[in-house]
Image (cartoon, rainbow, N blue to C red):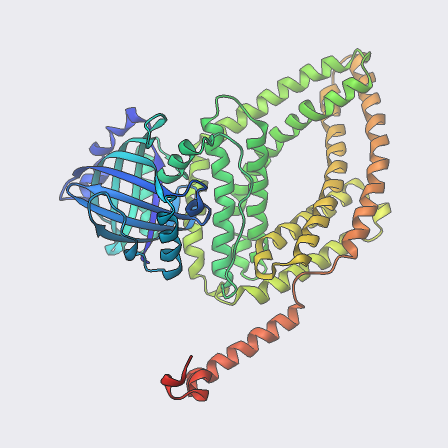
Length: 545
């Protein structure tokens, strides 16, 4: 199927009218806009089986013509959408499954249709204005302003739509981002991760778009290059980051879990740059790393105050109910949390954050062309996992005698190894991977508890500075309380580390993996010189079965 690459932006309906008046569009689209009304009907089973397979099947009416479209989501995140797409004209309002190229999918769809399961679930009605843009270096783009609504087929639930789409028709994908930057400089736009289909599914399935999102599953093909792997990993991290931003924006109240998940996403993205930076040094020094560090710092500050007030203080108040200094510390912490939240909200609504999202989106496209990463991903993954494991073992030497800062470095090393395992795990799926991730999760939890206790002491010291005698007394009680918990946590840490130490790796030895790839490369070269192995054994194609 042909591949569709587009950037999507949410736009306020009051701002939408300004899109048509942009000098950028009149300059790049001399033929002017085209206006049409599009009605699209989306099909799926009652269990949303197509959606689970990342497929979208729709019928769209464009004037008098009906088109059947099958889309396969390749990547989405931060407004960037990459899909494999096939379009075919069909009879008005009727699916024609014979147009589906994939034989197995065509048969499965036919079975669902015969069983009365493949039915319309939701629809969109859109007033679309499009401009055909002649961009730099001969690239051809389509800019579309869509205004309308998505609704369930029974009409009981509906939601408005107002967005701008930039779609690459021909030429370099990088031209897409150049025009996008001009657009966001001219109008208050926000990168939009949710497709029209996803919004329709949310209505049909009663799924709020405001709920926090965890990292989605990562699937790498066995023959993926390191460049393709990094593109997929960064795209997944960007989706994790920005969808929580969108959920937070749509939510009527602040949810600490949105901030927590964005912080996790920023850490995973930084880990990805550090991991692949060991293969291509230019990646580890990429300007995006500094921007991710900026964002993670703001999110981390807000997260620390959230944890202190939501988790730590309730335990302290239950342990010392008559301590007069604690309520004053709680009030002081509340002031600090409000400040941290305001800082985060301002940052996430800033042009700097939108630039980060756009630059990460562009990176997922550009990284595929880096020659240093054109090597197979599997042996690179094995080497990187082995390096991360060796570094972790080095950090864990003399575990019982590690200082607080040394335990923090151990925690970071454990987290990086776990993230790296999750990045490349699909290349080596199996029971060993599951056991590895489970034990590392337990290790991270033990290290995280110790880190939270250290953070609590640091925050409490900040709160007590300049406060009265009651606050100082409360600080002393909290310090003793956390020290007692720390001893028990150190016992848990030792137990978790012993389990990790005795966990088999799920990846092959790095040398073995490299030798295997070298052998495959040699075989491929030999086959290119003398014909395929199959052709040598079966010279007569009629003998093949």
